[in-house]
Image 1 (spheres, rainbow, N blue to C red):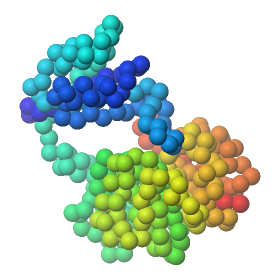
Image 2 (tube, rainbow, N blue to C red; image 1 turned 60 degrees about the horizontal axis):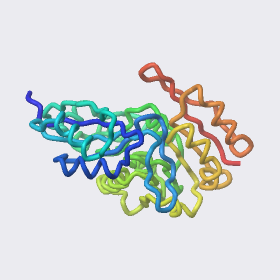
Image 3 (cartoon, rainbow, N blue to C red; image 1 turned 90 degrees about the horizontal axis):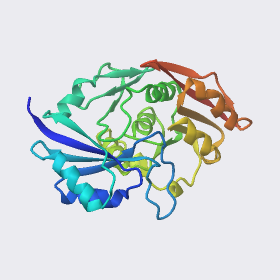
Amino acid sequence: MPAAWQQLHIDLDDLEPGIVETLALELGAASVTLSDAGDDPVLEPGPGETPLWKRTRLTALFDATANLDAIASRLQDRLGIDRPLTWQREVLEDRDWEREWLKDFGPMRFGRRLWVCPEDVARPAADAVVVRLDPGLAFGTGTHPTTALCLEWLDSLDLDGKSVIDYGAGSGILAIAALKLGAKSAVAYDIDPQAITASRANAERNGVADRLEVTIRRGDLDSPADIVVANILAGPLVKLETHILDLTITGGKLALSGILSEQVTEVVEAYAGRVSFDQPAVLDQDGQTWARLTGIRL
């Protein structure tokens, strides 16, 4: 199948992202995105700050006929830099991307009752609690071990009448699952605007939008919840320990995920004396062992 699109990847190093983005669009890019070129997750940007990484990669999307060699050369000239611009080309096949995603996404069961399914798939069991999902551009379908571990935990709880905070919500899957499992209310928090859009759309899709607050502002998290689930990464979990604990009522239940097995001790030590932890739950994928920590807020 002929290529319909191609991507120009540039590691920006000391280049100003906003300037390169503007120039790429002027040179015909259909879209431009910025991503982490290293492993440095953005936590909470300060007021007026743009959340960027120490090493930022710019990806510009062009149609298949664009001459990327010429575009890269013109970018270098417009930027006025002496060193060669380091870039890579990625050719994208012309596909029906929605069908491509659905091909690998079938009904998935988590625990005893909970299922996550594409929108057009029939209910897999009469007593199934079903979350209908389109992740959009945000993380969270249940296929990754960190999400799967959290979904299994939620399925094991009695959530009737409980309040829930989903910290680092992605697609909103955990907050929506909690509501479908009986929670009274939930807040889905994420710093990514695409996650906010995906969470709201998925809440509408599942008929729980009236019970789900979706927010990008950490200041909106002004009331502690009965249940808090934070599926982010070990580093942010440690750095945000006080904040996450303040969101959990005394005696409330807490789940921490996004943790590699070798990081468990570091996270447990950060929360020592304030959480009574259960034994970690683990799940392997692609040679990595992921862990979920759950416990009671003391």
